[in-house]
Length: 175
Image (cartoon, rainbow, N blue to C red; front, top):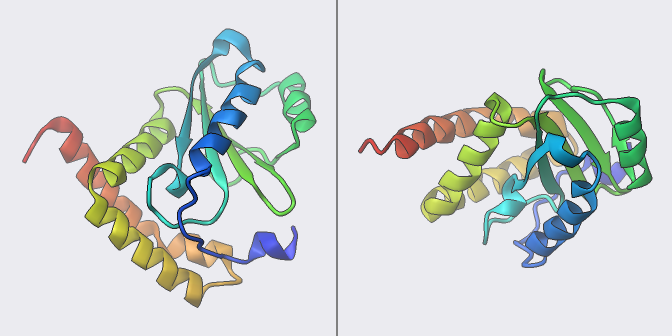
């Protein structure tokens, strides 16, 4: 892990992030054929206007959820390094770049991880005041945990859980 991978740096929103995602989606879509049900841009770089770590989160939804050696090799050919579930059961994690440019989450399409990532992103897109609140929190945490990514991520847990709960209510059409 490079020093750049350990440092938490929040940068202003970059209007190129959606383009970088689309380019990566094109590269990935040819790998697993019909098993790929969808490829989504998730995480903070997927929320217009939201400052973020400059790492594009790509989520690939597949059915069934399998990770064969051939796939790991093919993704390796695109510059991705495989980390297994990396602490989240049911998600296979890959990262690309030195310093990091992309995170790839290979998950079951329609599963819990899939749904939560989409719900979180869509809620922040729909409610800019919540996205602003999230940005303030991330900037504060980045200043407190600038060289401790695990603590930075852990400190966001309560906010993320709160937004996910709100997103479920919002999707259901309840007031």
